[in-house]
Length: 534
Image 1 (cartoon, rainbow, N blue to C red):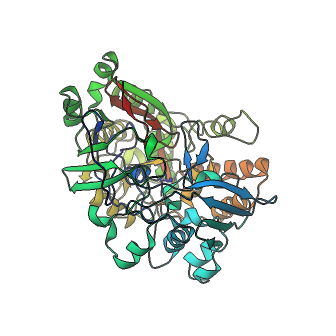
Image 2 (image 1 turned 135 degrees about the vertical axis):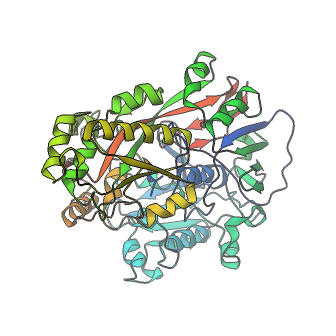
């Protein structure tokens, strides 16, 4: 998921994705006792077509709803669409929208809204970094690259409530994709009338369980129950109050003092105390924290240098002494929990581990072979990270490890998220940190991140053979062949040491013990639709 994806994705703490919410006009009222107070980070955008960061797309889960909705077991259930049909060859899908699906202003949600949203997300003019998630649709990639017209794209509203989708090739996880943010609809009339519609509560029209009524930047957001939502009867909270934070210590303090009910922004040192108090909930996460190298800038334009730095890190120590929340050292790119070809088998277990953790001897040897024995002769190196207590702690640990193990002095620099994201997009760094969470439950959501034209490939690395392996895997529905090709691609990725997998996430939330009913999916999204206080 760019997200992201992936995976796609903004991480203010090391523990999990950061979740926020918001959306448009509504006449719903709130009542005492039915308000969730949420400590979260501020989103970059509320336009589903432009979402790239975790904090953005988790907002989408409160405000917008796709054709399907994923549950905690990764099953996709009817949402905006009440049913669907698929052709025997898996190429043609027909979705039937609910008659009572409405936007927050009372307009009906139509198949035309979905067609418009998907085609504009693919348009070269919008330049969506997540457009690649729509490449499964016939001519989606061609349109995005200016090789055909919008009318050639395989999505068409047959009438107000029937959406016809034709794929380039069968896709085993297409239904899962229809639950993700890039496949959300947008209110066509509003978007066409106001290019800045997603910037203010009063112009954001949405079709999810909540709508945004207040957005004070760097302060707070408020959402109320969407009375027009088709399943409003099962939305138990009347209001979500979001306190926008970027400091884990503040979040922990606010939870302790009763100012918020739930957050995943917390001070690492508070983990044991919160666990003992029964306020900590942990979930498996399909996500990897990693360090992208700028392969276009010295010294990381040299694969041997990259691999030396990759090997000279003690991941186990970082997980146990810094994170302390059950994170798993990542010795491959694709995390545990992804299926392989045979039922019951995992991609990571089949692929195995690619290197030994903290392999200092091999790291020193590779650095010497690259022409920098004991780090001598290396140009100045800066490790860039986005502002956050946990990211800072990890950066300082890695700085010390690279000094001790390789003899290299590393300068640390931090930037606020929006500036940081722009630095990554412009490749204005040498080595930095990022996190990628699955956009759907298949290894491809991790493997295709490093294709040459993927908007989430923040490394500058381009490899035609790698691109070809991934494209071949996307063209076949033979699971054995698909997995074999993706294993080959991951092997190439790790051999080139394009980035440093550091650890697999563990979803860690500080929650008041009596808050129940919210759903956290394997994709690290959260749904407050059914939340309640016991």
